[in-house]
Picture 1 (cartoon, rainbow, N blue to C red):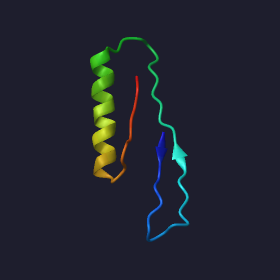
Picture 2: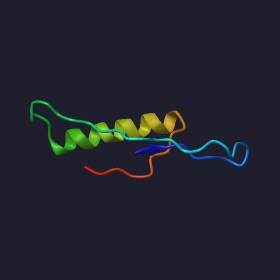
Picture 3: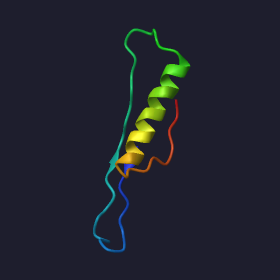
Length: 57
């Protein structure tokens, strides 16, 4: 779940959570494939200034 954080500059900015989920359709992926995809998503979010607090598989 993604959620923005209100700041001291804008205390009226209430967090709005986002849920990110991923599904495989043909069962040909491995656990390593999933971890690589999550690392890609995590690094892409960091590049855009989005902080991921946690994730699970």
